[in-house]
Length: 372
Image 1 (cartoon, rainbow, N blue to C red):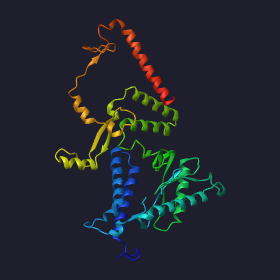
Image 2 (tube, helix red, strand yellow):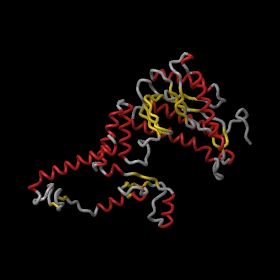
Image 3 (cartoon, helix red, strand yellow):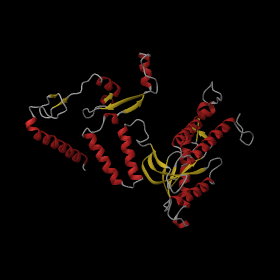
Image 4 (tube, one colour):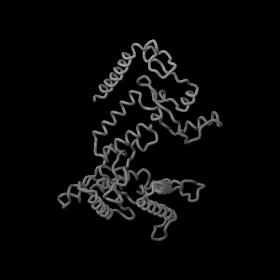
C-alpha cells in the first residue's frame, strides 16, 4: 500500500536520494580535480550513478527482482534532471505520471518556464535585454539572456532558477547548471559550446551533444574534422578558418590522400549476432561486439549495405598481396623505386607534366562540384 512521505518515507526514494547525492558529490569533486586520469575516473563515476538512478524504476518490473512492483514499472517518471544557455537549467525529481501523459506534462512545465522567464526578464522590468527561450527538450530549457558577460549570465541564471522553482510544486525544482558561450545550436539534440560552470573566467571544456565528435558510429576522419572545425569556430572564433579546413580535408579525400584507417566505421552487432549464433555458435560474434567496415565506391542509388566492405577481411587478404610499383607512362612493373621505366626515361619530364595536369584537373572538378 502506498502512503504519503509524511507518513513514512519509501525505500525507493531513499535509494534514489543516495544515488543522486553521490552523483552530486562526484560532480563537485570533478570540478576541483586537476589530474586528467582522476578526472576521467570521476566523470565515469558520475555517469554510472546517473544511469543507475535512471534505471531504478525499470528494475521494479522484474518479478524475481529485489523490489518488484509492476505499478511503478508501468509508469514513467519525469526526468531527474531543466537545463540555462545564456544559461542552462536542470529540473529536479517530480511526481509520477502515466507513460502516455508524461511527455505532455513535461511539455507543459517547459512552456510554463518559458512564459515565466520571458515575462519577468525584460527590458521593461529593468533587465539588460528581453530573455528568450531558444531551445527546450524534455528536461532542458536554454535561455538567451542578452547579457554582456558570462559572470552576469551565471548571476541572472541562478536568480531565475530560484524564481521559477517557486512556482512549481515541491519536490520539483529548477537548478542553474551552466553557461554556454559561444553556443552553436545545429538542430534538435545537436549542439556545441564552451561550457562555463565552475568559473566565469575560463571555460571548463568544449561540450558537444549529439554531434559526430561524440558518436561511435562515425569514422575517425569525420570525428577529427568536426572537432577541429568546432575548436576553430568556438575557441579561435574563426568561422572562415573552419570552412577552409573542411575544404582541405574534402580535397584530400577526393584526391585519395587519406589513409583508409581514417575511414573505418564501426557498428554494434544486435539481432544479427543472434542469427549468426544459431547458424554456428562456435564462430559467432558476441552480442555487443563492434564490426569495423569501410564504404567503397559504387553506382549511384546502391544501398549502403551493398557498398560496405568489412575491414578485417580486407586486412587478411592484403597479407597475401605483393606490393608492385608501375611506370607512370606505360604501366610496366618496375624493379626499383623509380617513377618510370628505361623505355619511358627519355620522356620523363613530359610524363611528370601530365601527372601534375591531371591533379590540377581533379582540383578543378572538385571546385566546380562544390561551387567553391
